[in-house]
Length: 564
Image (cartoon, rainbow, N blue to C red; front, top):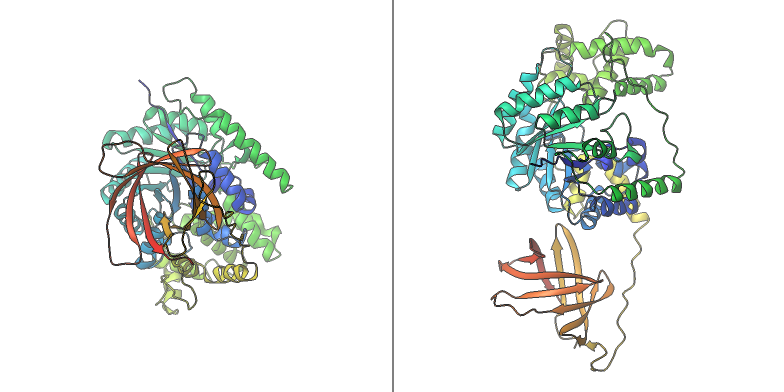
């Protein structure tokens, strides 16, 4: 009996943040995608969350183009993304129209698995994104964030998991972003989950306290089918453990994931070469925090507070701010410190340090959090904090807080409209950069004219419509027939211009009794079996065509174009 664990690679999103978000440009992303595709991972977690914003700002690249190109590079492995519930990849909840259009576009451009979570574990904030993911017929993983709230017991997570499954989740993910779950807690939670549910269970544990690998092994033995890892070359304490360590620990057992270790080594070598190319210096190792200490505060929150104090030229007050942050966190009922919630706690803590009394000034985001705009707190906030926040809320006009779709003249692509709706300032800068430095176009290379012989191409008469515009997974390709070459071994040679570059392909029609047309197409030495399955003629610009490519059904949107 074999029960190989399914391993997802999260390096492109959860690897060393300073490197992944600033140095993996499009060229490196495509190469890493090609290599990861060969390793045997269950999925590649590569998009959403911070990566979208970092592409706009740190890398100055279009996040949608990065997804398109990565999808074209990865042929066999599903692509996975993180969705922050109604916050999508942003910092505030968005209108349902934005949610639907964003997820639909992400699915069209190649996302196969949506992993959905909410910063407060508010199921209501996940309801719509789960529903949209199911409507799109995509695999939906609903995520629960582990919290240090003493009022939440392990059985409460099991109950919440059941509610997410009733909402339509195909799988459940337990996320511990601070690595504070002990192996015993992981084993107990997995065992409790397995008593009631058959849906797959994923563990996403960070290695802040160097126990993630041990916790994985305990969870896998208890029935967790999926785990997340990073490549050793980009592993850090704030991310999941190294895949190489997991493979070594499970090798030869019935849970062996059977990943290609040679490819893993090749990927690590490539990452090291990229580091040398950019003269990248590894960050100093980080110490694990004192989880058992009474004043425990996650290190990412401490780092955020340090940066806030440096901005106010008050670094010497960090110990006071740390103690205040622990109190603010407690006043909120110890919610999961994920994303914007961590920043809200840090900002309010620093504000309290400089005020004459605690909560003298309520930050706008803390006010919104107490009002419930970010979702429902599992444990009600401290009475004093709630009273002051609600008083501040009454003095501020509240309409229009939720993000809506913003139509801007000149934006024709739906991706651009969505990017602008999420991050208007950052998107505007990116659009200006695109205008200032447009991509260089490669001039078309026409084939050499030749007379109709058995050895040269035959030029087509200009009157023949020979152009097609095809869309597959959101990627539009314009192709045109340039000429017909010789017949070689029952294979017809064709000269086709794709992306303004002429390619030579061979087409063969095998003997088949099937009434549906079937072809073997050879390009760059690789052969593809293509069988026409079905078309839905419509009086529209594009016609949906379904083709079977090497046994897999693909939907193409095709229109004829006339090229002079």
